[in-house]
Image 1 (cartoon, rainbow, N blue to C red):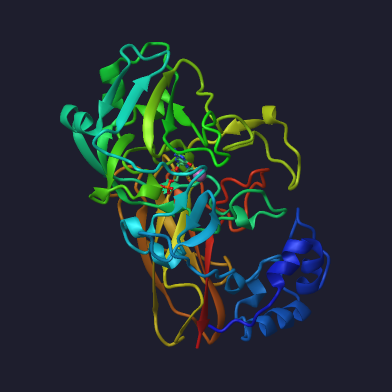
Image 2: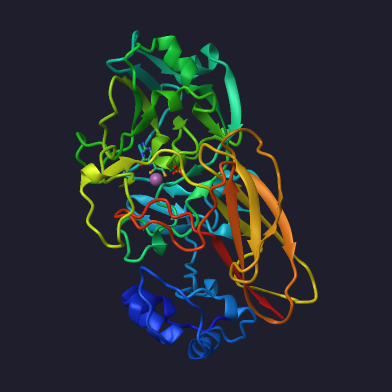
Length: 436
Ligand SMILES: Nc1nc2c(c(=O)[nH]1)N[C@H]1C(S)=C(S)[C@@H](COP(=O)(O)O)O[C@H]1N2
Ligand SMILES: [Mo]
């Protein structure tokens, strides 16, 4: 698909209300967008796309066609393939959706979210993990070899998604890395259960929380400051899927993803899964490490108007991530014959829960068809889905994918609950297709 270079995105970024007036030919406001594309808007939109929009009558007001999504050029990061760099100090890079098509995310395609600078000159043989904290009975340290020798080794496929994945879609913009859809991956991890190690060191009855520290350094160069030190409540730490891992996909964990040792507590914001792990603390209170307190990784306890200021007392720490899905095949922007079926593939995940269904729409959400959903490899892994569609006539289409969790909660079609730091955007993934 050759999209004409348009500034619809810029138009919306500058002034969404004026943009709506231009595109939709009338007044709307960002709190209640109703109605559908008007004739003048349809002409503007079709002209910008360079093709007709057969289901334009179902296009919700305020929708910017998926074809206009920014396509940034991939950059070279050692050991990574096709990732888009959003920031290089600290390094933050996301994976384009079509490169996440593998059932198990390869090391070369796992996103990178660093708050500080990774350690240098790591020696995995001398690496030590200290277990301590006021609620630890018998503090001690382990080498990786000791962890392997003493505890049962386990391999699980686990999904990690940054709490800020999707942040770029919030209006007004939320500060932070402008992730689109690619701060998610689901590799397989090998290590030991966090609970086996904690139990070995003795968890006191007053234990409430488990925090981590890593060997990365603060970008300011100040050695007394941690880039990040978060964690999870004791019950999450004690789940059988919570790991201390030294391998990703049967290889050493890539340096940027936490070599030689990391925590993996899947289903929660990726920030709870400490990289370059060298210390775990069993706490008698909510861990008070760097970026534990609001507004970091916190959302308002009640919904707020976009752009509001929210006091820290009105925020809660994010726990399980919401239901979400990706369409990883085909790549957005392809052309496809309207006479032939188009096979679709992707993944869906739901934080601590399971996915109960994945649905597909080619008419801007007017109708939905179920897809074939595969079972999980293990709890807290994403689930793969497959489907196909056929377009009724040539023109511009969007394939929308929407997952529902096993508690009946489904993804919103538009960007959900604005929040000051731009977390938890689980709006449907949309892929543009030109039927020819
Ligand atoms: N020590 C340390 N652990 C960390 C981070 C970090 O900057 N330092 N980033 C966290 C965040 S915010 C996320 S989303 C995940 C990202 O993991 P990945 O880079 O392997 O994808 O790691 C988490 N663990
Ligand atoms: Mo994150």
